[in-house]
Image 1 (tube, rainbow, N blue to C red):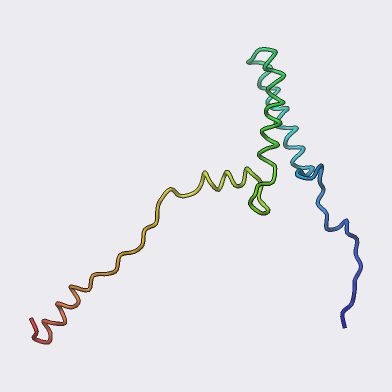
Image 2 (cartoon, helix red, strand yellow; image 1 turned 120 degrees about the vertical axis):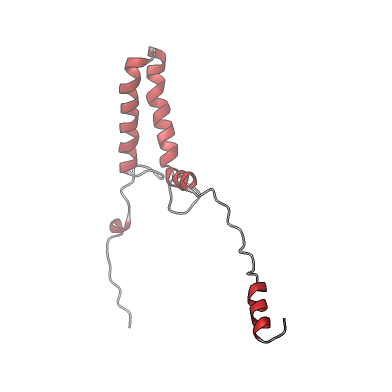
Length: 111
């Protein structure tokens, strides 16, 4: 007979900020936007200083979003594509038995 064991459903849930992002992903987005703001404040005009963190946050969000591949994020799929081997695999040609047949024929006096 089966026994039912009750447990809290909260144990099975991930710590999520939204439907697509975990809290760790949200922290990565904030850090990336902060780093881009620090870098762009010294080197570009004031108009671009405001755009850089926003663009970085959007790009980071898109990279951290789940992809169409199950249980993978977009950056993981992109890394698989980049690291994929460029070689093309061809079918192996059938081995040539000519040398083996000549040797057997000579042994039996056929040649």
